Image 1 (tube, helix red, strand yellow):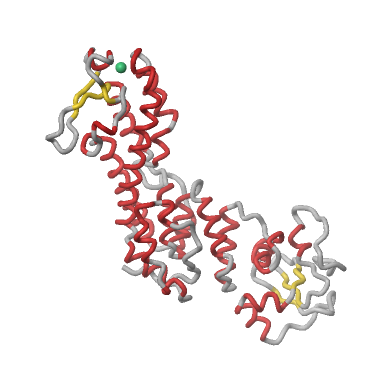
Image 2: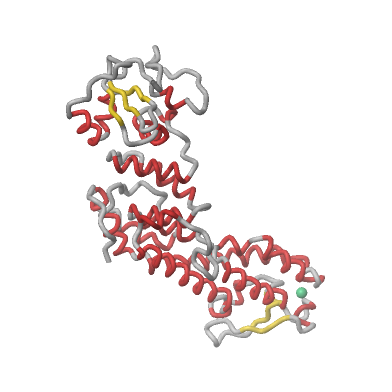
Length: 376
Ligand SMILES: [Zn+2]
């Protein structure tokens, strides 16, 4: 027998990390035992499970198996889940202290499978927040899971975190893509390519969107004030519209823009703009000029903010193109675990998508339907 029997107290006592949750599910007034596939018993209450889960309700409605000889008081139900998965799903029914921390991606996947299997929409907002945090480190896997559950907002968050250079995935293998259609792979590739192109344009054709009044000295050179311009290290550009006067910028800054373009081709995420690896050569080059040296860092900080804002705008446009609002509505309406408040609003992450976010706040969000293939 795997378990000695129920404890004499309802309150879980001190126990080791390994046994903590199992011990927590050893309630003295339990009226049923759930036995995991690896033969660990959980003493729980039928009413608590039935009230929140129609699946458990139906399970307990059918005649129960005969009592186990070792635990004659209580019926036993053999579960398909192992003890780890049972800990997770039962944690959602009982106190939050019973729930594993779910800091691991695989645990969140298990939790999502459990809440879907047992029809528990309540924990979904919490699990989506966990996924959102994990997207920073495992964006491809989170993207696949988001696609599986048809969470457009989460898919977009994950897609934005993908680093991918020339090839989409490289040698890495992500098992989650076994569970989604090839369209998901294609969509991520499309987003990746479009984002890389859009970001590259921002860096390469900076004079098409960046006006001279947006650049501070010493990036914006002033004849006679800075050796960079006087000694021919400055360059001239034409800001749009073309009838504006020409302006000079420091040569060390145009060198920076070339490095920035190359860096963003490899990793088109906004954080790259302010990376030390990118900025150090620029600052060193600026310090070769006595005048530029004094204000280069401050001017670069201001410029980086402007550049990142433009990047975010272009990336949001790509996101809206690859995951358009009309598509999002149909995806979300067909998702079994959708609530409009389950995720940090897209408008807080992508301000430009405020309209798209508001469009999907209709009552359609509340319809619990079976998941279907993504609509077009
Ligand atoms: Zn200078």
